[in-house]
Amino acid sequence: MKNREIADLFNEIADILELRAENVFRVNAYRRGAQNIEGLSRPIEDSAAEGTLLDLPGIGKDLAAKIGEYLESGEIDYLNELRKEMPQVLLDMLRIPGIGPKTAVRLQAELGINSLEELKHAALEHRIRELPKMKAKTEENILKGLEFLSRASARTPIGVALPLAERIVDALAELPEVQKISIAGSLRRFRETVGDIDILVTSRSPEKVIAHFTHLDDVARILAEGSTKGSIVTKDKIQADLRVVEAASYGSALNYFTGSKEHNIRLREIAIQNGMKLSEYGVYKKELRVAGKTEEDVYRALGLPYIPPEIREDSGEIEAARAGTLPDLVEIEDIRGDLHCHSSYSDGAATLEEIAAAGRKKGYSYILVTDHSRSLHIANGLSPERLRKQLAEIDSINARLRGFKLLKGSEVDILPDGSLDMDEALLARLDIVYVAIHSKFKMGSDAMTKRVVRAMENPYASVLAHPTGRLIGMRDAFEIDMQEVIRAAARTGTAIEINAHPARLDLDAANCRAAAAAGVMIGIGTDTHVLSELDYMLYGIGTARRGWLTKANILNTRSARELLSILRMKRR
Image (spheres, one colour):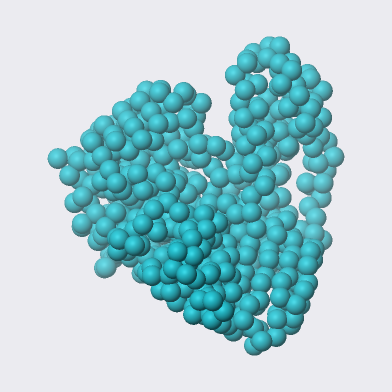
């Protein structure tokens, strides 16, 4: 909890400094500190107690002092002073995609905007376009951004909800009264965002379990505390519901509360067609319960094989189950390596040696190093000279390793005209070339699609990274024709990435399924900047499973030799 709290505060400091037009390096220091703290695999309180804050990546004396101050007092005086001089509406406006610090300051100063509601009215009344250098398109983008913000605030990204749910489950699983426990709801189906957290338990002492649940450290407010259900709001302002059921109904209850609603309706229809009744309590023939203890029993009673939670969306899974053609979905154990990792050469926190050690610890055979190319200055993109130095260091490290290797790559910017931000001679030295959009997001669909397709036509473009550019809860996808992109990927032999970072999960499940149908290979990469983010592979696997992908569809289920052989076919 403290890691997230401090990361949020450092990001707020960065926002305010940006509004004050402070030095960009100072702003980025707080942003990078926030990112590194949020990505820590252990509580920051432990590092503070050990006196090792300065050993953390991106944490210097100034940031370490503020961390210590917050841990001791619950406040940061510097941030309090900044808040006094900064109208809250400016910080609120920065949450709107497309509004930068300069625009926010102008809107507040020149139109007297003091709330997001006032901003909406100003856009609807066309008062913004009357300002110098403001256009009708600006008003349109602001209204779109406000609508996006409204949608995003109603749901919680999986990257926030899943760790919280797992903490709750771990705490409850230690109770002797708990027999079985599982996450349910859309979180179990690995939806990208969730409305709330659902947890299911079997216990002979439900009141004790619920009482423990409603008094966990994460609880901010108790909504309900009954004999079979408890409901809370956490300190992260997320609702979590706990239901306690008898063991004989656990499977049917887990199925019911996992959903989706559409999938459950289809199952109930099948039950009725077979003269049975299905509910959260079990499958019944007249008054006799014939199944309910396990999910497998429920599906078996309905004449179906078990259907994995991730594809329970009434999107063809019932028909596939009946036909015996359900896919054998990819498992995290199938993954042989990570295909997207940044080092301290660009905007990552770890050295190449540390990345290699972390990869070996995870049991991987390889990790692809994908530092940014030269044009992405904000991410310390590598010049050709620095990239050559990195390639030489990778060769030196690989010469000492056995059973593991660092693959040589780069996340190369796709420039506005579709050309790549790297000379061909240097591209040829890389094992795998990721290509990605990091600028000019507001091009129209036709122009953006042509830009990306031209990049994929480059014989050295191996993988298209985070293809729609979305940031869940922060930025919508840019306008692009993904069906045309998928057709181009199939035609050119270019793979597409599932970016497993929970803020992206891009490619999404629907496009995963379309890509696989077109014969396009998929690579899963965590976009790691802090080594603990290597664990984000779990989110990428969840998205792949939602997209009906099998081991055969995924590049990094192969050995390094097989992987490179597949991708180098395009160059030949």
